[in-house]
Amino acid sequence: MIKNISNLGDTALYCDFGDEVNKDINSQVIKYFRSLKGRNIEGIINLTPSYNKLIVSFDLNKINFKGIKKLIENENVNEINENFVKKIEIPICCEDTFALDIKRLESKLFLKREKIYESFFEKEYFCYMTGFIAGMPFLGDLEKNLRLNRLDTPRVKVPKGSVGLTEQFANIYTYESPGGWNIIGNTPLKIFDSSKEKSPNLINPGDTIKFKKISLEEYGNFNE
Amino acid sequence: MSNYFEILRAGINTTFQDNGRKNLYHIGVPFSGAMDQRNFRLANSIAGNKPHFPVIEFAYQGPLIKYIGDEINFVITGDVIFKIIKGDKEIQGNCYENYSIKDGDEIDIISTNKSVYGYLAINGEFDLKFQWGSCSTNTKAMIGSNNGEKFKSKQRFEIKKINSNRIGKKMNYINSKIEKIRVIKGTNFDYFSDQGKKIFFEKEFTVSKLTDRMGMRLEGPKIENVVNTNIRSEGLIKGVIQVPADGNPIIMLSDHGTIGGYPKIGVVISADYDRLVQLSPGSKIKFQEINLSDAETLFKLYEMETQNLISQI
Image 1: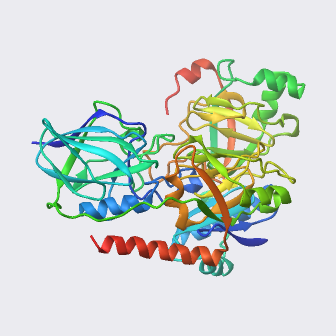
Image 2: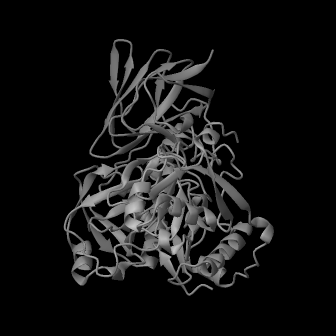
Image 3: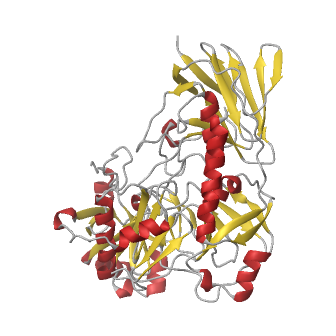
């Protein structure tokens, strides 16, 4: 449930669902997000769900903080319809040309790469949120033995398709962008497609992700 | 015969912009749209268009454009130095005034004057690609018109429709400079030391060169964080002032990343946003605290003022 509602500037409302990051709290955030989005409320111009917060931004010409707050407090949140939640398999190639930070992971985690990949590919991941850059999914939770901080100095350019790890999360760079996550491989799959206006994101909050290891040859021959 | 703009010089950061994209933050697509919304709306209104029509936005040095086609009108808004070249004749242009151009004439947008953004609208419609209802170009995500890219030299932009003549339509408007940016305290205001809070509201900051459509980085006395220099990544809106570990504030602008993990010390009020984005690198600014209800009133006044300007054309 929402623990606290406050204003973020004069055009947004900040819903705090608690300090922790876990699936339960995030599911609450997503529930509110879907419920509000489904109602197409006049004046709301953006909804941004994250791990444990939901930001509702609005058009100050149409509604203000007080009005939006009342709406949110009276919102009857529907249960998540399971049909919304997808299971998606993401192929990734982990050859040296793509696994830019595997050596750093080996030395910092005191694990051999085989062990790192074994741990990584074994698990199913949950999509907490998408954003920062268009379509980038934030997936969790990594096994405890794979958790590491960001690079000390972020890369100016992380290649499109790169799969990165930081702390308890994995992400996918949907296009070339600066970034500081530890890169372990690359997917040939298009994660964000701006030509599909209705559903540009392959992965959405609440979805379940399983990664599948592919060879360099399979990567090269990949056809969507 | 087709009518088009031929770009002889692209300028530093020239793009098509309109009023931006809504309801996409949750997938990571920012709002975008014209940075200075008032000057954008004034450009359209003087050119006789609906207020949210696509226009050409330029920053610092603008484009040099050759026009080919039937007579059209154009207007430039902002604080901009430009001239119109008709054969051997050169005319110094005034902002907020319609000009007529004919086949072969050129518009040379030399520079913005002690400001950043300017706008060019025509009495007509460019032939542009819309994505999610907006033509706004986001060069980072490669979204919007012109394949998500800035203008390049030698490009041509077709004009698919020319509307009625607007010659004689103009207005007098002077862009006021802003020195005190009014802000509402952010959700992590208490992450900062008493000294840090005092510095934020009392000292002067300088707009750095690392400023673009995504964000404005400031330099000045460091703002000390006593809780945590990172927060769990969460949503952002334009105007949010984040302070990363180095203690230098960054203000989120129209193409900002949709989520971020630095503490938010404040948020610039909506009424001050248009003048904030016009501050060029080297400008000095101070922040002033304001409460939510005053910010809402100031926005209403700002909006009324814009409406009044439009109704006087």
